[in-house]
Image 1: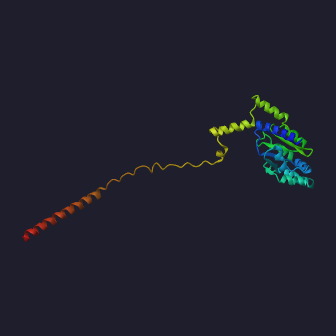
Image 2: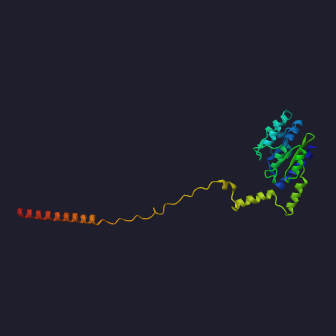
Image 3: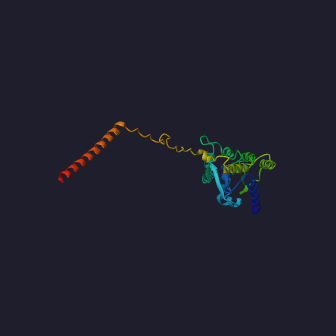
Length: 249
């Protein structure tokens, strides 16, 4: 019986992997009802889920689910302990918390971009999740975990994609990635970066050659006079020396 369950799980996982890009580690969103059912069935989620899905898993929940379990009191104290050990994913209900079912449903809307699994025992939530294409659904029956088969809405969505009427979420992501590699679409991380100020060049006025100052006529005339005086002094000294030499002879 266990082997047949794993075969069905493998088949369903292959369907979601090929058509919706579901990859390991599988992110399992738990609500309070699933945690309570696991507690009653003595199911060790951290050990049994990876074996059942044959891959790495991450147990997740939201703040709204934790808040709901706190308000329900002591009856769900064990379920709250299980949920508190899960990774808490950010939900859009920061200020005003909503019910756990409403919160989990909001996490898988718009094509389930984070590829969440929804694990719940709530029938109303299960019906709403099945209307969202590409969302794997899990539940516990007779103390065993079960990965539900793809819903009719999911199968119809895949058939519409194959006929060319729709583009899958996985294909949209691959197209976006290719556009970013080709430089056709700016990376959102680059948009967030602040534009650095361009280093400005030198001031064009500072590059101009300095104009030579016009020579001062008065200073040049005084220099000429000094030169002339020096020349005259040299000539007179020569004459005097010649006279003195002649007289000695």
